[in-house]
Image (cartoon, rainbow, N blue to C red; front, side, top):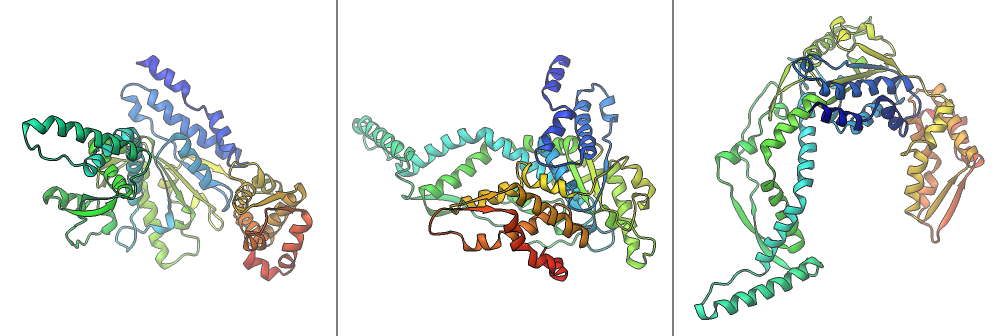
Length: 455
């Protein structure tokens, strides 16, 4: 068993490989990448530990500090994708202290469990897809060629042979798609849920009870007959077959385990629940939100509609700009629950130039692919890319610094006329040069007031 675990461990990404994968999408921020790579690898290392010590090894939660648009959220999202882990992003400013109107902090764990359920169910659906499709094929044949009652023993053999030949002929037509528009009658369940209004301090969306499922178990399911095409029937029957083939108890157990052992919660804008030095009145609630976060981050039981979930081994990554405040303004207990701190750097003009072209999902590649669908080939010169990066850096330094998000506003303004005029009568290649960039954007840049609103 130990050797199997070690073999499995060698197949997993090392911290260096994790950073390499993150480099494909995020430019710079090497310290933050290194930090989250170690945190992710430590979760895998914990799984290799045997005995009761495994439960004692808790994740080191992370606090990212840096201005908006530098990659905090993207690092966390890509990290979760690498691990195949349930991931949820929440805004700390959306939560309120218990007793106030709004969402309570435990809702982030319920959201994580819902995402984990969807993720595990999708995996199980993929496993039973082929079996379900085969069963649907047989059910469609039953609808297209229903069995006839046997008349006499003498004719029964002839009838069976004839029905089999008809069925095989229909099977061939069904496989090549010739019967997709034929109408058939199928039974579908009625979507009926009794109207029950219940007042809960957590709010209806956070109750942890699924009333439709509860009443489905009490009341018999009603069905109604519908006339649909074979194509529509295939979709409806496929979902029914998948539901019957999936072991829902196993899905729930695996989803809860995955949320507890591998879940990642990204808490953005955590600096917004820090009361500044001159705060008054309602800001008292902000400290209450921090205190409500303490047990969730440290480890507690949270009630969900699928059962209790422990948060001890969920990895929490908090992030904030901390412009007018500092991490030391957080309540001391919360600071202690976010022991790993990493500061992300502001982006420079050189960084913007790399962001435009190097990532696999870079803006240049995105816009080029979008316009190629219209028969327009965009060709960005090196000078144009450098000029776009320079303008982004300039606007960020003279107005509000929104980091790499500034590139989105500049690119959409730069290509506005091209995107509006497309499609053209004939295929067209448009070269984006430094002069083209200046001609399109200089008028806006020269008017500083206009630049604040457009760029």
